[in-house]
Length: 42
Image (cartoon, rainbow, N blue to C red; front, side, top):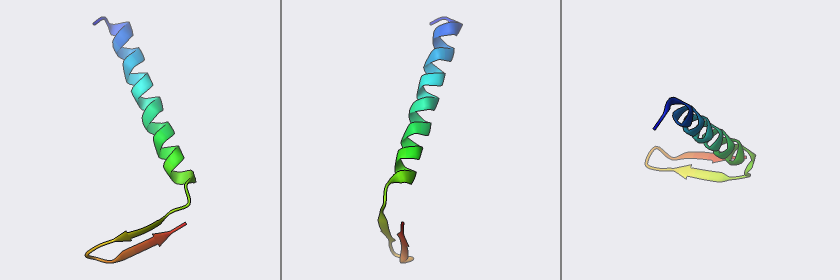
């Protein structure tokens, strides 16, 4: 694999991760985290 392909691959992975994180932030959700019982709602 040459350097150009490697850079393109890393950028695509970065965009995918950022897109996923943005998607998760936009979702309205309720989380219950046990056993410390952490309740989180948006």
